[in-house]
Every structure is written in C-alpha cells, then in structure tokens.
Image 1 (cartoon, one colour):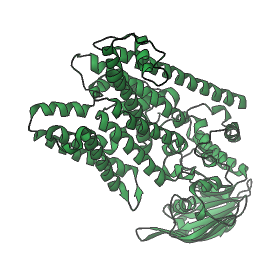
Image 2: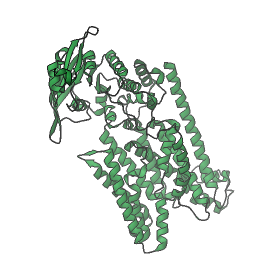
Image 3: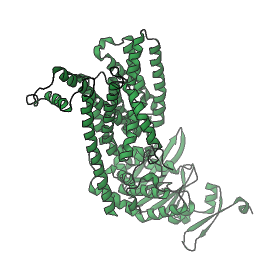
Image 4: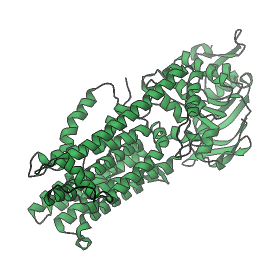
Length: 259
Length: 360
C-alpha cells in the first residue's frame, strides 16, 4: 500500500506537537520513525491511525482520502501494534486474535470457519499456534507482542503501524519482533527507540525533532554523528558493521568524547 | 496444530452450550420451587397447571383441580413476583457487565453512574412526603425513574469535555453526584414527618420485589430484552473496549458513539429496574465476575450466561427474603449481600481468577 501524508499538523492547547509533516511510504517498505522523547513520534502515528484528529493536513492510502473512511473501514486498511497493555479482564489468545476480525464483520454477523482459519493462520505465522487456548495474561512480554501482531495480521490490513512496540522487551524479543515484521512484507511504519535496530531493519528512516521532520532517507543518509549530536545531544561514532553491512552506532561517554 | 485449535474451539462451544442448557433447566426449576414455597405450599404440577390455565389455547384443556385461593396465590401474587425477580436479576447482571466494560474496571456495578442515589431521592420524597401524588399509584416508580435520569444526565454532562467523554471523569462524576444525592436522601429522611415512613423508605432503598404485579412486568421485561439484545449485538465492540480506548479505535470501534450507546443502555436498564424494585445491590457486581470465571471474558458468552445466573440468583434471594422471617419480609438487598458476600470472598481467595487486576 502506498501511504502519503501531506502537511499534517496537530496541537494541544495552542502548542504545536507536530507541524507540517509530509512523508510517503511505498508499497512493501519498512520505514522507521526516530527522534528523541517528546519529538512527536507517537503523536504523528496516533494522527495517522486516527486516535487523534489532526488540525490540518491530509493522508492518502493508495490515493484514497483516509478521513473520508469510517472507523471500521480504516481498521481494514491500517493495523496497529502498540505497547502491550493488559486487557481489563483476561482473554484467551484466540479471543484476542479474533478481535482482529471485528472490522470485517457486520453487527449481526457470526464468526465463520474462515474467520477462525484466518486467526489460527495468523497465530501460526507468528509462531504462537500452540497457544491459542492459553490465557493472554500468562504469556511473556515477547509472546504477548507476537499475539498482538497476529491480531494485526487477522485484520488483513495492508499497512502496519508499530507505535514503539519493542521498548520494554528484552533484546532477544526486540530482534525477534523486527525479524517477524520484516518477513510479513507489509508496508510498515515503526516508531523506534533503538537507533541500531532502526539502522539494521529499516529501508528508510524519517527523523523527527520538535514535531518536524528534519531528515529522511536511507539509514546511511540519516544516521550521521553531526545530526545525532544536534538532535539527541550525544556524541557518536558510526561504522559500517563488517557482518551486517549496516551502520552501527557507538555512543561515546562524555569523558571520552571531550578528549 | 490447526486441528488442535479447531478441537479447542469445538470443545469451548460444547461447554458453552452445556452451560446454557444446565442454566435454563436450573432457572425453570428455581421458578417452580419459588412459586411453590410460601405460607401455603403448592405442588409443582399444580403450579404449572394454574399458569397454563391462564394462557390462551390451554385454558379449556386443563381440569381445574385447585381452589380459587390457590389460583389467586399462584397467578396473582407469587408468579408475577418470581417473574419480576427473573427480569430484575437478569437485567442487573447484564447492566453490570456493561458497566464493567464501559469503565474497564472490575469494581464497576450498575449503579456506578449514580442511578440508585438519584432514584432514592425521588422515592423518599414520595414515601415520606407524598410528593407527586397526582401520579397516583405510579408516583413511586416514576419519581424514582425521574430521579435516576436526572442524576445520570448530570453525571453525563460533567463527564463531557469538549464533546469527549473520559472514563475517569465519568467514574468520578458518578461518585461525586452519588454522594450529593445520598446527602439529599438523608436530609429528606431526617426531615420526615412520620416515623413509620422512614422504615418504608429504608425498605425501598434496600430493594424489594414485594410490589410485583402483572401490570408492572411488561415494561421492565421489554427494556431488559432490548438492552440485552443491543449489548449482545455489540459484543465485538465490548471485547475491543476492554483492550483499551486506543486499541478499540484501531479495531474499528467508533468509541465516542459506542460509549454514549453504552451509557444510554445502562441508564435505561438500571433506571427502569430501580424504579420497580428499589436499589438491589451486589448482584450486578458479583454475577459478571462469576460468569467470567466460568466462560472467560468474551462478551458473546458473558452476556447470555450472566442473564441466567442473575435471574437464578435473585429468584432464590427473594425466596429467602420472603421465608426467613415469615410472615415478615426482609429487604432483598440484605439477602443478596449476606449470601453473595461470602461466596464472592471465596472467589477472591482463588488465585485462578484475576478480577481484571492481571496476574503476577
């Protein structure tokens, strides 16, 4: 799916949280969104998945105006995985994945065998097929996140938004999750905290500072020591890693950097 | 692996069907026994013969072997009362499910929006001061209904900020308005001109099915059926709501509209039930939790099972309320709390149910 954002702005109490954001995601691309805390990553994504209502600007999915779609139609186009939070009451894993079928269902329509098939296929794709009957709250953080990806898959949307989904996970699960999302071949837009992970997995990166996009391009183009020092306030050295062939960022402690 | 999940799904469905069949049988048995029991005991066969003799098409075929007094007791006194118990218990439990999903809170119960406190103001005014006497025999019910609607309207308005309703505000506004309404009720009771009226008012506030008449049954029945149907149709949205507001939105729920539908349904259900039976406590809090323990949190199952469990529970609570101190009657709210409380505490001590608090 081709996603186009044009001149998107959002503010709370007169304060601009994001301003005149324009960007484009091409079909099947994995695009990263980086920037320090408070730079507006989550705000931008929430405006894109319609939890927040932008003040200005337009979003087009394959040329179709997003704001003309109903909430349900939107959910058939965009799936979101955000930070895992426990539901108020305990559901089975299958219950949770089946929620992904809701946008495809009319009010009185019952779940068909096809719905269950789609849901269990989604679970198997994320390697959680064995856990369908388990209760969600007994899973580990990484497993929960995979179940939420399965729910997004069951939604059969072509555009996947990841709203800092790996922040609190152990490094192993962070890598697993990124690998998994890469294999899905969906158009994906992910807010990421870890610059090395962004460098390793993203086809392209947008960098935000104070609600504006200040750099975009391939990881090589965006991840540069000067830019990182200006935006994040840390000194870095960046190498091309001999094994991965990707940029590898080393943060320099103040004491070393000042020498 | 796929076969496993299909088998699990099939097992789940069978288990659910089994639970519904058992509960239907239990409800039928409970209704029968509840009508049989009382100062004049009546045989089960007689109970149903009398009931069927009043249904069109059956009356000629049933031989009248009972006394007119028995017929009167069963048809005019006990049967409507037991049926009212069924309707009220079912309705309060379903309202409890809706309230807990709306607030995403395991402590939420049907009266969370201040329904009972608002109804109490109207009811005490009628009982103690004879207010609204121009409404005749409906004065009490209408005043209670009016009181609850006014309260919920206030709560609703307070919870709205720039057109959006926040759950926390709804909860806090409910508590604040409830406290003010309770104060108003206490003030009215303190100012009461007659002592015996206070007792009547107390009874009303703890709930009772004693006022049951056939004429009062149809409206609450319709409201409970309508409310349950509406909630059951929206079971997917209710499930999504438990995952959090943002997630519900990304799953296609128009959350502001759905929340307003939920609040209106809750208001109509509890307002109607409180108007006819007073504020019967505990059932709306407890039944949904017990049901989730049995069938999980999927609302497609929670709603119908709650309907049956609530009905059975209230039918038996009313039997106790009538019989324990016979010929005196206990307010049913005392029975629901005294019997439900220990059971609930036992449930609380079991580690296999999290009450929405998550597991360690």
